[in-house]
Length: 275
View 1 (cartoon, one colour):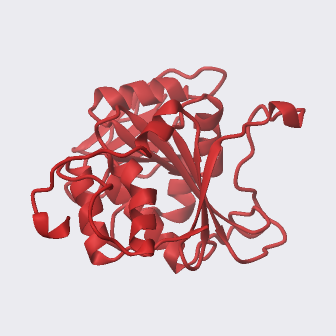
View 2 (cartoon, rainbow, N blue to C red):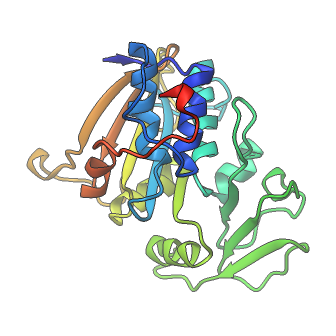
């Protein structure tokens, strides 16, 4: 297992990779910094086409909250910092309306340097209040994807889709967001939303962060709408394991693009002092 050490120098390089100004290959790095580049470099790249990453934090026994719905401290401090780094590396972050209502998610970058992503809430019935934290105006674009005719405040863009079997189609959601220029997406939650994108074959990667606690009950992290009846048919992604410190991260690749993103990519650095 690789221990991740996100030093200021390593994170500056990762942000340069996001800007297309550097690669993760070159330079002199500690083992922990190299692990950070191996983890975040593939997510920061913009040269391999559209990428969709699911990320979920859960306990050792696979729970994302207690039986009363308390989910605030499932991830440890390093798991939370990782989530904020993920937000800083993508064009847009997507959550379902249940997560938006229950967690009052802001979806901003606060625990690291980097830009705030555009924010997208999937809200088929138009339940999200207009003053929800995810819809606050801070300069990032805000989208609500809904199946009803409901106006939103100025600056909030509505994507109107029809329901299929009483649900919005993840493929249609993805296509509409790509059309808005959002080529790198983080599906942050909740578990139902992530599972629908996973089963639709739309995830390039899935990250599962495990925190060292046992909850004993409560909602599970991922439950696919159509689970495998036999282990021979279960999903078996490529997998890498990283120690974040307080949490252990399983980084799973589902497409050829995921494997390609882990291959060397040499780009001349603008700042030779980091090479």
